[in-house]
Length: 322
Image 1: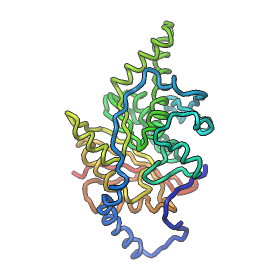
Image 2 (image 1 turned 60 degrees about the horizontal axis):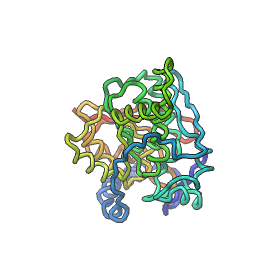
Image 3 (image 1 turned 90 degrees about the vertical axis):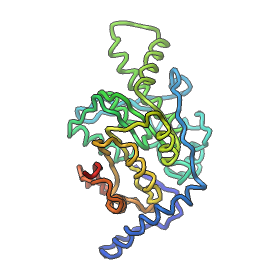
Image 4 (image 1 turned 120 degrees about the horizontal axis):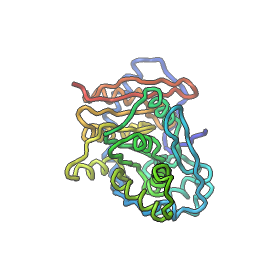
């Protein structure tokens, strides 16, 4: 799978073994994050809580489902990515990100589109880790942060999570991809529960939507605005588990991401983060994010899984320091 990033940053292809150079670069991360507010003042994207339609698939034409199976995990249903791309011009898109990604041939346009329409490799890495670890979510409150297709949150939902909130930068991603995927998977579960009865399809859709309203929330917007929105809720939610995959590619976002972890993670909660070692052409990666976390001295990072195929990738966890 090829990836294209639309950033005005020179492509970095040379690696250095100079420890002093790496340390100097890491020290700059905190400064970049503290200066990010000036950059974000032009890019702030207000957070929105989205209301679920009766049937999120009813307004989508030519949708084709596919099933993702990993180990012993329950099957995850989602819209086929290739079909989604080919039918993009037919879809509702107030942000016009579908047209922009096609015309610019880019999977990432900073401050406009943050890559949520693709399922990136590290999501599969985290799903495989969950399968290996036998992680279950009964009674847990879960946040799928930067959710995209929503596979991680859907898995938590299917494995007994009490509440799962899905967040992505783009409202188009939430409405056109995340919601339909969650609905597909819950519809399948509902059909399995009612296999001996045959209610009308409209009634099935209503049952599924009611179930989702009880157990799911859907949000779009940048992390700074999202955090303010959640803090203003009564009570403000605290999550037992926060999933986030491929979200540390840009150092400018580290401060707002870290703030979400600090304020929304439960005292004994855990963040599961899957990422590449380095994002060429963008500048972020695990080394710089780890330095940023260490400088703030709030969380302890633990390496859970390393993947050597292709670009080096990792699954790590973050917990509050005791």
